[in-house]
Length: 285
Image: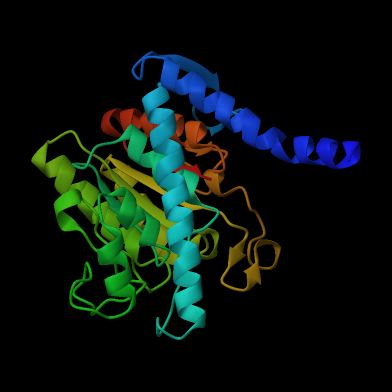
């Protein structure tokens, strides 16, 4: 009996810790500043990296948890629907990368633009999309964000500055630089985040677009979300150098821990400030 009691106590320890943390957050004023440190230091290429100290609030912490948990549950549900053949065609999931989407949104506004590849469900949700729009689009229904005609790879929400998922590997990068050109022309002090995976990091169009962005000092932030696989191909089989933040050569770069939402928030805030003053920057998560 005593052994069972001890086992039950051990099993409940994580729950007790979580409950204590929740009580701490709820008893603290929701806007009281809290300073945290990123898990890992940033690494800069041709640039001094930002500070590891990040300011947040209890309210923001709860928002981070809620948003990332929602994204994870949504992608798990999409996985089940795909396996049940209720979602047809392609279905590229984002689970495990939620900290990038959530941290990025915490550092920017809806006037800033985001354009990404085909892992776009959670980016759309972070831009203000709804679960109904997500699942309707995935299942080809007219209530979807692209009226059911785009499917998993082509989510879109122009009114929140989300210019879609793109199915052609790397094709969104020059389009993102085009958005940044329009922003600079309009002088509206906003930036564009062009997201791509490590599988697209060897695409020629990336380097062509980056060259033009650097020539014209465009407010473009190229973000390589490195999940170590380009579809089924391991990173080490496709890339001689996996230091993607250095790929810009003459363009500054920043290596960021993409599993740390605070690091992503800090990096995106830093990158936005840099891009508005100095032109493009490459970040690798």
